[in-house]
Image 1 (cartoon, rainbow, N blue to C red):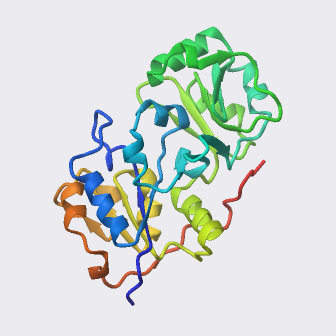
Image 2: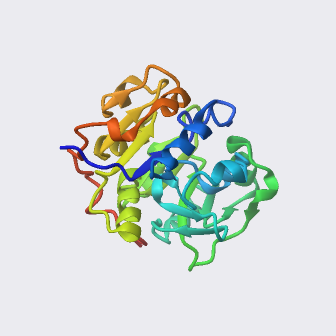
Length: 281
């Protein structure tokens, strides 16, 4: 069954952006074409807020997209109209306290603030993510501040032992002894489905064409009306998409007529949709 496309969802790194963080050739013009065809375009990224700001995307680029930008795989929303940040899904408030003794060096990301437990943690965090040390405060997060992410400077196995009864997701940072702690069930597809349901009363992602390249895009590619894996996408992720591009994204968008895409339907449902909720703790 053919389904009218109304929305387009784009990952950032490796999809819209090249290795240097620049918008890939032809992409801006291609997104303008999608808008001319009546689609609303969204950024749905795994980047955290400060790393998103570090890209320095111009107002002209951002103007091509809806003002609501989904970050942290959808756990955090930045509203470009008001330059405001909202943490939709948070970690349990007691995680910093539980880490303090067995794992003293960590950084808490709370809204638009990065707060380190020690000077050592602040320095390691700045070096790890290439952010100015001045953007990392040292101290404690207020109890009412929603915590979206914690970066602990300890092996993931140790952090899992400390937080073994806490509902969260713990991932090792490749090539380091750092671990990233995020809310369990973080999912781009579930977050976008929530946003479209709230703003447009959409029941699912059947009216979405999505673009991505890596593991955290798989659910979005699979559950959208039409999922497109970009040229440099890894092979495993490409299996989740309806199309795997053999040309650059800018070239594809430059010739895409969404009305010509047929047999569009959301054949799969996201396993996280039912459990995904705002302000989980």
